[in-house]
Amino acid sequence: MKRTIISAVILILIISAVTISIIINNNTSSDMLEGIDNAIEFCSKGNNSKALNEIDRIIENWDSASDILMVFSSHDKADEVDEALHIAKVYAENGENNMFIAECSRAKIMIKQINELEYPRLHNIL
Amino acid sequence: MNKRDDFILRKYPDHSGRLVILNGVMIMIITVLRTLLLYIFIIFAVRIMGKRTISELQTSELVVTLLISDIAAVPMQNTEQPMISGIIPILILVACEVFVSLFMLKNDKFRRVICGKPVIVINDGKIDQKAMTDLRMSTEDLFEELRQKDVFKLEDVAYAIIETNGKMSILKKPASDIVTAAQLGVQTKDNGMQAVIVSDGVIADSSMEFCELNRKWLKQTLIREKIQLKDIFIMTANRGRKYNIIKKADA
Image (cartoon, rainbow over all chains, first blue to last red; front, side, top):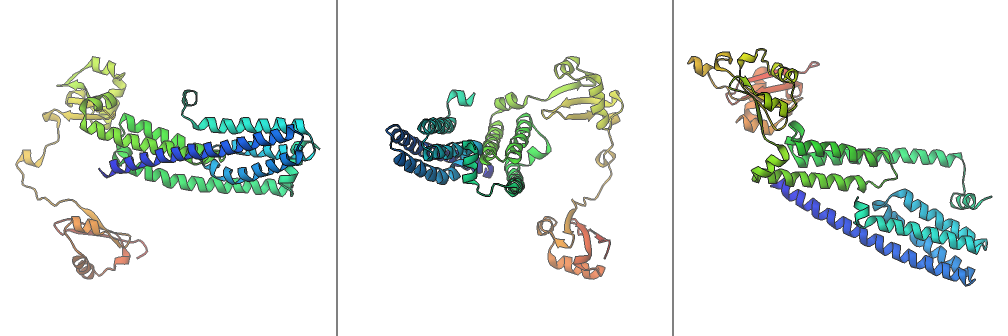
């Protein structure tokens, strides 16, 4: 009977952990995606300084969020996003707007992929 | 200089060989820590599943045991994978195994679906060839199993059953079986079961309780035998207060 109770508790804890991971992932990624969209918009309008500030903010948020995200997601995917954001920053500093937008878009796609993998969709399960 | 190198220099100002070596050492440390954590975790998981899993594996238990070992290896070897990607599947398997075994206990039909049923391959001294074919069991397999049960003549066997865990149980014919004291009408004394009450100088209180002994009796025995507790390698005893002491080699 003890084992049954322990197993039931384990299942409940797992369901809770999975739910929390989806919520954290969702919150982090939506915040990041919004920030990247803003940075792209600033850059498109020629406001490079604002785009740079925005990308700095995004990098800072990602650094703090990725520590928690890496508990649930693959580390190399988080590192790739980190890399893309830093490269985008370099492009922004050098005034290469097109490359900045391309790199931001790449980061967006990777963040969406990390988010997408967490959901129990058929193509993820199969 | 390309953008990637620029990024690397900004993020890692001290971009030298030392960084590469340090990174390698850190990965090794992480691997060591993960292996230790997963080792402790798997012991805990197998303990939850119970003693049956360790001794005689049923089909579902065999599957779970194999899966656990494979799943645990992934985060152990690949530090890029989060450890939770190994822990969660193992916990799910353990919980499922406990629930499945509990349901098997309550529901005989379900148990038959998961584990199958025992098959009689030798019935009243006659080999059931159809049963052997169904089990994909050859005559060599049959004789190998019989020999492992110390049966060297087919004529000695009354019944041979292949259990759900794949092991063979044998009932010999009375004429070939070992005679018991009861059959000979011989009165024998019941000495009870021996238990280890002292192991490497440490008293096992649970074994003492099983043998209905106490520390006072132990102390008196050791005084009588002129031996100290720390010099004992193994001491066994039974409920009849019969004991056996083996001293340590360097005592």
